[in-house]
Image 1 (cartoon, rainbow, N blue to C red):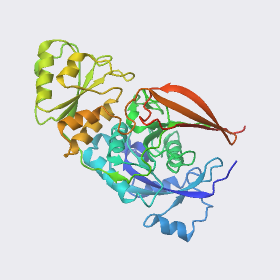
Image 2: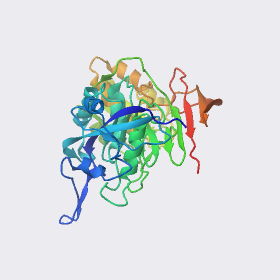
Image 3: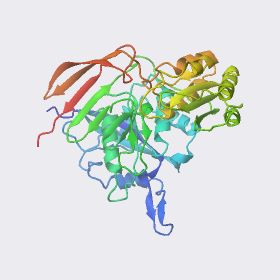
Image 4: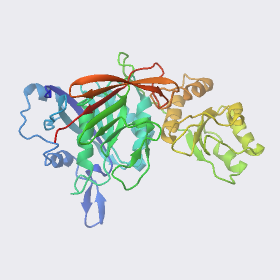
Length: 411
């Protein structure tokens, strides 16, 4: 087994959320911790802080103005991870986050992009999928891992999931097992592509699912890495901050009136995600179709996404297509909304351009049919190729290869 000989530098951005909260007896609830105390708390965990590691002068210089924290040595990891923490002031409940906060995260990653090898964002769980989806579009030509994680129970609780989530996120951000230069969510021992993820449980320690794309990595007793697809490594990284706020989602229900649809689609709305039935089905009543047609005629970009987490709208009715409604394929609602906001925020794009690009795979957020997946299986230091046939699980249209790596621990 090759021992870690290289150092990976990771910046941890604590934006808020449950992760660092502490119990307040007077309030009978959780409260924000004292600013700056998170680093002190983390250093009480032997799995997150190696007190015996000697931080060199070069290490300190590389991390200025931050103070590096050494992660304990991990036997099967390629790199020794040194990380530092920066905290937002004030910390935010993720329910209160908006597009300006996404832009701040994107700018901060851009600011420190050359200094660090990867990034971890500690974030509230409720809107983590929206932030991950938005950042996947805002961080163009991303060549380094950006991993979002958090906790269902705070780090201060004995039974917390926080420290395990942070440990896994740090290892993935430091490319300890594989280099996955994407915006991802790490939670409950699983690494998921951020723009493919939805929150499906309010209470589970594995609250997220990726219904239309397999898990990118699983960190259990064995470490399994599969389905990562590096893109645009040789192109210059660029962070976008312009997002259009005039977007929204409308979920169909039986008996929805034309007046309600008309009201929702009124200006200043510029983009709408329609959550339709099944495989993208919309009522055939002419008054409802007319309201959608009128909005499309005014230049509103309307995207058809299914209410079903798993599946696609590729087979949606021709009536919607003829009206100018865009197929959202197997986009999550979070990805559809943030992609729409991102494209409408690019003011040089026409409405026609936005509609066209909504149906294109920009960051691995949509399934592209008939791509060939080749997997490489790593076992005991050898690599073997194995054919996986035809894939329709969001692989990139240029047919890039995917690696499936398994690191086995001996009992």
